[in-house]
Amino acid sequence: GWNVDITGLNAKFPNGYVIELIGGNKTTTTSSVAITEDAGSTQVATVTFTVLPDNLGLGVSPVLTNDAIKLTNLSRPSSTNCALAGFIITFMGSPRQLGALGGGQRQRCHG
Image (cartoon, rainbow, N blue to C red; front, side, top):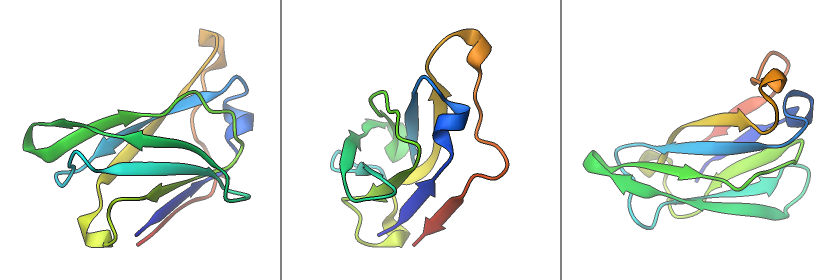
């Protein structure tokens, strides 16, 4: 399996955020990603994918407010069969509160 840790989210997204997940060409109807609090093991969401042509996929989280999260693949025990190709974090709130993941944040993939 694999993990992606993301920290420093509250500074960039004070009103919350959603995570759009992009599935690679091995996405299936059973592909899913768990989102847990990075500081603990409390699961805050499970994202499943809508499968598109060529086994690509899209999934979206509910609105989250955790400062640190961990994305974990639930349905793929092998990192060579990974369903997550990328992700986009989108802010919630007024247009003046644009947020983007910037310097100093920890982003780490294990596989």
